[in-house]
Length: 83
Image (cartoon, rainbow, N blue to C red; front, side):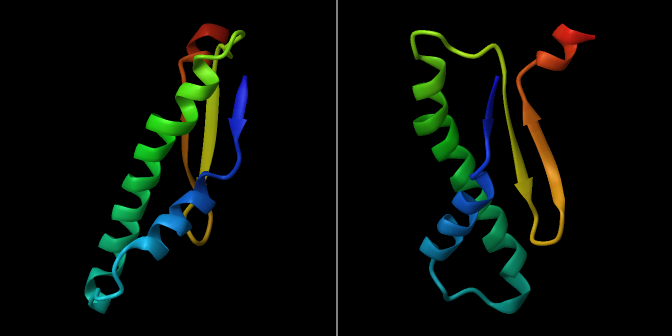
């Protein structure tokens, strides 16, 4: 199993890269766009490196912090394999 621990940092990095011309009412939309960008990078860059390795893991997970608490858990189907 692989645990990705820096996904929330990737979201923050993507947030900073987005334009600053966002109105206060669109603040959450900017965070959502940053999260989507981070998810794309995760799926296209980091995950293939691990899954295409000589001994790929059977599962992976990452936790995402939503500025106040951990709110998203993503994993492969490991849970269903265990239960």
